[in-house]
Image (cartoon, rainbow over all chains, first blue to last red):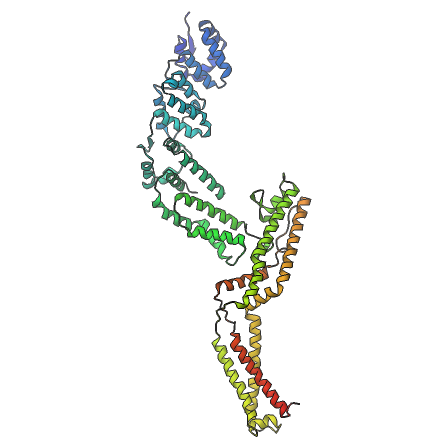
Amino acid sequence: MSVTIKIRDKEFYSFEEFASNIYRFQEESFVLINSKKFLTLLKSEKPELFKQVINLRETETNDFCFTFKVSYLFNPLMPLQFYNCCFSDIKELGRKILNGAPKIDVYTMDFFKNSLMSYYLRLKGYDCTDPVLYSKIVQLEHNFLENEQRSYFKFGFLLAQTQKIVYRRRGYKNISAFFDYILKSNKLHEFAMDFDKNQYVFAWLELLGKENAIKKFESLVQTIRLWEE
Amino acid sequence: MKKEDMVLLLAELCSYDCTDFLEEKNQQFLNSKTMKEIEEILSQKKDYVLPSFQNLMYDYEKLKSEKIKSIEEYFIKCGKASYLLYSFKNKKYINPLLCVGEEKDTLLKNLIITFDGSDMFLGDAIMKENYSSNYKIDCIKDCINKWRKEILDTFIYPMEALVTISENLPLKRKIPVMRLIYGFILLLANIFLLIPFFFKDGLAYNTLMNNITYSYYSYPFLFLYYFTFGLDFLFVLSLVLRRRIYNKYFHSYTLLFNNTYKIMKKLNSNTEKLYNILLNCINKKSEVNGNLTSFSNLDYEFQAFIYLKRVNDSKSFTEDHLLTYEIIGIQVLFVLSTYVIIIYFLIERGVLK
């Protein structure tokens, strides 16, 4: 029996094909997957997948996570894709985050927040092939809510596998060169304006092992603000 | 806190060498608005000796004198300066049992006390809910005891020591040269008064002793006598008045020496009065009203104490109206001796009976 799944004006003739296009029609796909018609079709065509979808529906409360996970149930071989973005590999996602810095993409942020990165890596077997990267990603997801923006950029550095920060189109690999540029080239005022709000620099510094320095910085700033008040 | 400074701090904490910025930061700190404001407040209260104030002043001096060695230190110093300014502005140093000048107008409820580990207005602490009356009473007791102890330690006990050692104070006395010359001339004039008594049958002797009719020549003698008497009188009178009116040191010393017991009594009574008012407010859960005038009536004595202490500490006390009593005392003695001798002569010769 042939399968035809229709979203807007697009038609898909298999569940795999439908799955690989879910990221383009995130909201419509969610509605469709939950429709009685679709579930009946799924039950009759792929009863095993149907059971998995039903189980997932019971455990997953977040719509975005649900559709993302369903898409990989249908087609586990797909590259990383969500919310209109498709990445050939995880490095590309990392590069996208860093190239956009200090701006933040809320969909990517949502993706990390919902621990979908580790889900994807598990699906692709990274937990066996690159356990170090996998454990770092899990750790980052675990602590994501502590500082969402900083974690977001840390994901960027980690996935892009780089320690280079790009500021005003110039790349800096070490702290000294970066601060030399900021402090001695009349860029201080411009940089200072919102450096503490966007966490790009802090994420980079943490990556270079300056966690303690940042903690001390934050605690000092907090104390001084209290004194000033 | 400037954002630029925050970047510097971050750079330093990440091991970036910020030495080049330290001098600039040091100057910025010293010329900051906060430090200027503190300086202005302190310039108006140079002689305030209560330890709570002195501690704040010491902290300020330390902040001012020590050079900044790191950006982190710069931030800490800025924070400390802000807290110091807050303490000065809110008059955290005020002791309600001993206020000077305008401080007396401070409202009782606006005093800052430590309540449950944090700074709080006295009025707010008393009205604070979720704390038992007993807790508040204990807290108030602690505060009042602290204030009382502060006065005992810095005013009453040192005052007792001060009035004892003041007599031997190594004063740097300004010798009143003009007054000594005047005294010397007066002394000679008094000696001159005695001369006629040693020349019997002379004009002066006859004029004074024999009650003969005054001749034309006797008037200058009489004038000299009366004139010298007048000068003697003015000289002695001026000594007494100067000592009384102008000698602040003498005055302060006498005030404290004679009133030690009274001062202690006043302090106890003020402490009791303050405690009773606050206790009443706690029990009735009513607002604290009034200012500090009624508990703080030791300021006159306190200022005298500060003055004496300053003189003692400096050991270079000079006062325009302080006379060299030893020399002028001898002069006075001579003047008085002249009168004794004259009276003796007059009685012996039967002029005075």
